[in-house]
Image (cartoon, rainbow, N blue to C red; front, side):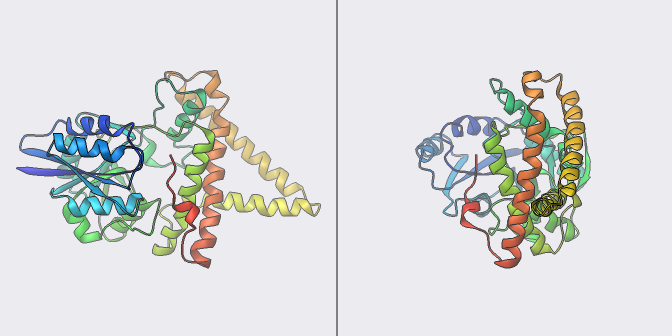
Length: 345
């Protein structure tokens, strides 16, 4: 009988862990397959560990282990080491999965022979979310805001450079290695880059469906994307290339703003005015596209629409500022700052 291991890093998820485990173990599997759920807990202190102990006692399919490193990459590797399946599926606690999510992953692996498969990244706010959360989700989903990333296209199936979460034959880790534990963020992008540079292939299937709950506030979004941007240069330094040109644009723009700001201080204000005006026009155009795409969404009204430009700017500027800080630390010091090693939620 084919064993599929679901690996999950978590920390301080007492509010969500029970519902997540029920959902994961209720997956509809093809005949002849069975599940193992391996959860690597990052030394939670909110009651998550008590709930995990109860869940493990009630269902032998659940395995709970410690993740002393407390970050996603170490948790994934700890869970991988404990898993027994010939197929590995990564899940996160704050994502909701279609009942056939695992079955579609298995089908995609079999049909394509890929080294990693996954579905599109579908952001949907909670039903009772505030307008800002709807604006954040709408901006996130737009390929215009994300620089054309295929992962945001819900109907896209094909070969890609990276996918959301992932599903691998165990042989992929034997061939391409484990997740890089020096990375607090972007460990999935780095691993996919390692696969594609090593001659492997990554496939996105529109049939692999899940729903991601994005950050609900502007401050939380800014902290998240500051971290994403910060750790990206460490990936670039390791591989001596960017995974995609779109990852360089936000940092280049913020750098241009800084230079233009310095020039403005000495009396040359035209470059700064021009940059701000051009970006303002770009944000206005992107906002119009985002609002048009999201107008039919439940809960998306004018209260959310007027917040879209601010959400777009938060994505770009936070990622760009993080990229510059990360580039300085990656090339100057070779290690990340401790303040960026604490995961945000």
